[in-house]
Length: 116
Image: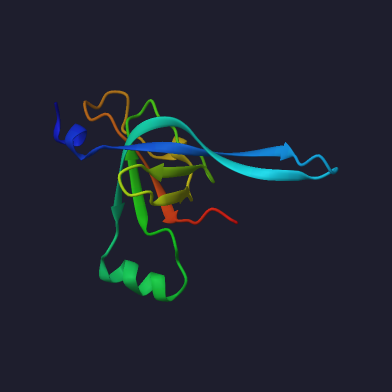
């Protein structure tokens, strides 16, 4: 087991589903979906703090294995504490090369709240 494996926690995709409300409209439901192993790291550098003051919200880096591609606007939930993240970059853009022995992919994310 690698150090990367030790850093991973269980996350679940949060899927949006619209159900008819019986009156011609719909009700939005947010449901936990497939589970994945990932790590969320908060960027607490001075540059990130300065950017946060200026309104930047993508202060997390989410790391997964290469076979998991998180897409822009995917919603995931860290099951250990219930914190929800919205992905703010495209997972197909940042992964280790095929020839590399390190098996990882990274995206940026922000903390997010499910709309009520």
